[in-house]
Every structure is written in structure tokens, then in C-alpha cells.
Amino acid sequence: MGSRKKQMAEAIKAEKKQIAFAKLNNCPTSPRKMRLVADLVRGEKIDKALNILRFSSKEASNRLEKLLLSAIANWQAKNEDEDIESAELFIKEIRVDGGSMLKRLRPAPQGRAHRIRKRSNHVTLVLGANNNTQSN
Image 1 (cartoon, rainbow, N blue to C red):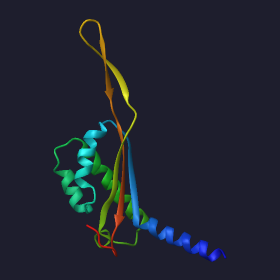
Image 2 (image 1 turned 90 degrees about the vertical axis):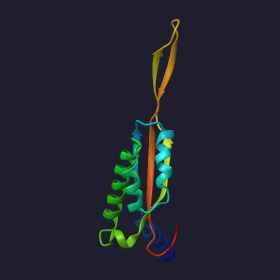
Image 3 (image 1 turned 30 degrees about the vertical axis):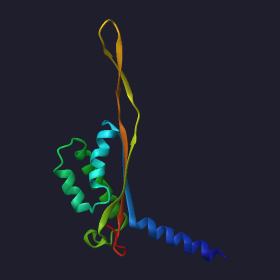
């Protein structure tokens, strides 16, 4: 009776080994600007994604490059015996959510004040390995 539960647990564990993720919280860039860069690398293989981020002129690309390197390191920590090239890692999911906002006041004419919203974002990056399945 407990064997089916154990088999399911093993299957879930094996699936989790194939993916690795990294999060970047409270990054002081507006989510809209970060999404422009995230859309460039969504679904790409990691070596191509790293090249795209390295040569992108956007400021957000430096932060995403660092995050991608972190996710790769997390994958390596999980799968020490496997080789990165043979695993064919790709960016399975990259999500940019709005973070907290810092509200500031900017003086405006005639004694008024305009509110400035300094936005931040949270990025979640999930890597997947496709050593047996073919996608993209």
C-alpha cells in the first residue's frame, strides 16, 4: 500500500532534479523595463541566453545575466554527476512580478506636489533540462 506513495515521491523527486530556479527580489527597476529583457531570453538555451544578455544595452540585462548564472549554479549543485552541455539546459520559465513601490513627492508649480512611484520588481527564473525530450 505504501509502495505507490513511495513511487510517486520518487517520480516527483526525479522531476525536481531536472529543474532549478533562482529568484531576484526587490530589484530597483520598473517591472515593465525588466519584462522587455526577460522576453528576449524566454525559452532560449542557456548559452544563447547568456550571449543575448551580455550584449544587450539595457541596464536590466546585467541583473538578469547574474540571476541566470545563479540558476545554473543551483542546477549544478543539484546534479553534481551530470554535465551541463549534455543536459541542454534552457529557460523554462521567467516571470517578472511587481515589487514594493517607494512613493516620493516631486515639487510641482503653484505649491502643488506630484507623487513619484519608484517601482521595483521580483524575477523568478526556472531552468529546465531537456536531455530526453525535444522542445524549441
